[in-house]
Amino acid sequence: MIEQLTTEAIALLKQLIETQSFSSEEDHTALLIEGWFRSHDIPFKRDNHNIWATNKYFDESKPTLLLNSHHDTVKPNNGYTKNPLKAIVEDGKLYGLGSNDAGGCLVSLIATFTYFYKKKNLNYNMVIVASAEEESSGPNGLNSMLSIIPKIDVAIVGEPTLMNLAIAEKGLVVFDAKVKGTASHAAHPNTDNSIYNTIDVLIWFQDYKFEKKSPVLGDVKMTVTQINAGKQHNAVPSEVELVVDVRVNDKYTNQEIADILKTKSPCSTIEARSLRLNSSSIPIHHDLVKAGISLGRETYGSPTLSDQSVLTCPSLKLGPGDSIRSHTADEFIYLTEIEEGIDLYIKLLENVL
Image 1 (cartoon, rainbow, N blue to C red):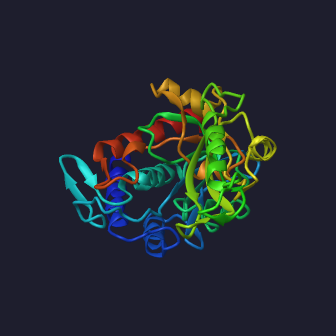
Image 2 (cartoon, helix red, strand yellow):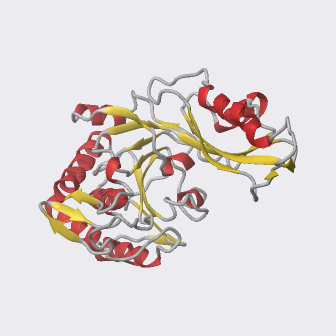
């Protein structure tokens, strides 16, 4: 059964690659996923472009495990030498947009869910969500499903991790900041030039260290990523606009980071765009983690953001493929990675379910 499911999963991935599914444009890939569930006689529901289902013997008295990955993609960059919307197999690699991030994870989790769908007397209920809008952190993705699907107690989020166990993931807060000064003609003296004022502010952001370091995720990482000021060569602007990207470890909430920067940063103003993309983690002693370690998988903390950020329950990021390949030109996943992924997902859950 596993061999057949693997063959079907790879065939589905090829179809997904050849079907455009940029964030918020996932209608046609959603139809392909619907087709899988129909062909395996699994009842499913659809909300916007999110497809979800529960195991056959769902029991409300049991805890519930979420399996989740996304079927949207970023837009291809200009570096592609192959057709990004063509599934091409060469030297054991399956090329195509979304093959690695996160198509391989998605089809592997769908195959795994199908394997367990009819099994009785499981320790956990299972819910699978093939979600939309992950790449854009849009309003109609997994976050919109949490009030619709059954209450989740723990989750596996499918992202490329080389099937190692990402037991924590950094959150993200983006800040808009301003450094103010006095507007003037460039020909006249000005001791309150907003652009010169920004020099000390940039040094502060470069040098500031948050006190709490995570043993898994390390330090909070803060980076100024955008600067905008001025409209003409002979006029000093009254303010400089900055964008600051903060990757938050599991020792802080996003609100705590916002409070610290409002109190301590030398900016004239600083405001968070959103506080909803939180850090996430799962205890090292959780059964899912112990099962993965028993299968020889390593644990680590992930610096990249995923749909884990919208979950409040313990969550594990785990999937075939390599995060380094995500969003790169000529994206690919090894076929053996999908085969191994399905096998390891099933073995891990057999230890828990």
